[in-house]
Amino acid sequence: MTAGKEAIHREQRAELVPLPRTDDTPTPGPRLSDVDEWGRSEHTRTIARRLFAPLYDNWFRVEWEGLEKIPKTGGALLVANHAGAIPSDAPTIMHGIEVERGRPVYGMADFFFREVPWLGTMWARVGGVPAHPDNALRLLRDQGQLALVFPEGTKGPSKTYADRYRLRRFGRGGFVEIAMRAGVPVIPIAVVGAEESMPIVFRLPALAKLIGVPYFPVTANMLLFGPLGLAMYFPAKFKLRVLDPVTFNVPSGQERYSKSRVMEEAEKIRINMQETIYEMLRERRSVWFG
Amino acid sequence: MGRRVLITGLDSFWGGRMAQALESDPEVEMILGMGTREPTVPLERTEFVKADQTYSILSRIVGATQVDTIVHTFLVVDSTRVSSRALHEINVIGTMNLLAAAGQSGSPVRQVVVKSSTLVYGSASTDPTWFREEMPRTSPARTRVERSLLEVEGFVRDFAEDNPATVVSVLRFANVLGTDIITPISTNLSRPICPAVAGYDPLLQFVEEDDVVRCLEHVTRQRIPGLYNVAGTGKLPWSEVTGICGTRLLPISPVGTHAAAAPLVRLGLIEFPPELESLLRYGRGVDTTRIGKTGFSCRYTTAGAVESFIRAVRLRRSVGDAPPSYTYSQDIEHFFRHSSAVVRSEG
Image 1 (tube, rainbow over the protein chains, first blue to last red):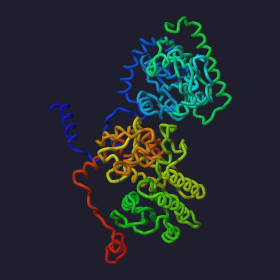
Image 2 (image 1 turned 90 degrees about the vertical axis):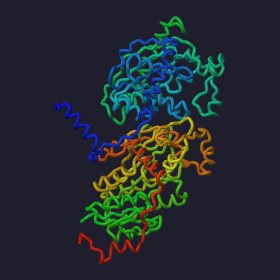
Image 3 (image 1 turned 90 degrees about the horizontal axis):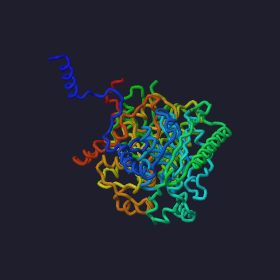
Image 4 (image 1 turned 135 degrees about the vertical axis):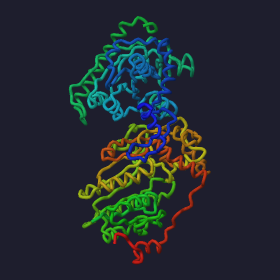
């Protein structure tokens, strides 16, 4: 018997004798799904990617500029403008970076999402994470991932068509503080096209309050297609431009950062994004063809 | 001199298990267990004192027995088993009396270990995906169990502040599953149908019952102060937990959930205390880095705990409940511990 065969033989024999456990390695249990600790499932994500790809390629005909500014490794906080009654910019950015840059993006959404039955679960399975500062810190610093936030919050998608492409206030600049604490760059992304894909004609605040949602939009899509309009986007041409990464010259890991510095940086990023959006609109010849 | 340990709730699941674990430790010189009923597990050298729920005689016992360690396992975390009144008496008043006795002047107590629960974090849409020990809950506590546990932990914090020389260890355990423990979750999982809130599939963490006892032992033996989360690694969605256990999901309306579940609870088909209702909506995750740094790791992951539980259920389904192998009899226990007729090896 050769030495190699003998080794195999010994290995097989060793397997037959259960050895008493000597270490503290945890006993893994059986798994039936591939849902991870954040709630995402590769299986569901594959299906979602397959469903969204035709919309991305043929309906919105998404075009990127400056994708190379998104690093191949390491954490970075992506920020973008937010628009459209049911925002199509989040899946577009997530899908685009995943397909064209080969990196998953964790979309951070308002807690409200979690409260909506089915939708909240679905969002978690495809890669959404509740926008808690601790979650962002974990993703960016500990796991070196890409996280996407919309600093405008619900103020962005809830604005009516009359206010299109006018960035709302960037909250309290929390996203800057988290990037500082995690020691990662902020990468702003300007999106053009989402506003026209589902423009809000007017809102029904009383109804929103009644059913407990942040806003209840009546969109042009709904006026045209009825309830179908909830899922029917107009084929606006999407253009996205990645801006230069913003780094902050501050030590990471601090509990608190100067509020004035945070607000100043947030405002700088906001102005830069607003200017870029205006520039992109100046270059745009047609809403539908770019 | 060896350690002299007092265990509360000797008649409860955790008290009994903890006493058994400490009996094999040669460093523990004396174990005294308090309980409202007789112990239900065989114990070799643990002394048993019967007391009322609120432990009003505790200060006398502490003085008389000179215990240096108190392991407080007698905290109710399952609101389906006791009345609201009793819950308050046991958790709040019981802990208050316990800490008062441990903190009296000239007290011999050098360590207090409290078995708390991750219920103190609650479960809400505004929660982080992982709670670290220093993070407060994000929603006000509405259920009585959660409120009472928060009150208990408040007392313990004050006690630790007032008695800096005493080692205070608080362990917050995730939901427990295992071969023997009965909780609303285990009851639901062992039945053919199991409640779920329609449209939600929360991520849950479990800790196996042996790991709970091992962890209590670990902090007691090593005298580790501080506040720790304890849970098995990994999280499982509720649908998967029920899938592993082979039970069918019974989706309950996400609107008016409590009212919709009430008749089913009344019929005894499901158990659905308010803390489970919010858990089945938003789940809960705790960060266990801190306990890991003390040199403790769970032997079972979350999925491992679920498996350990369901294997025991399958066995019971085949052979039925094991008959109680032990009945406490004061005369017999007294004879074995104190009669001069019994030959004791330690002399």
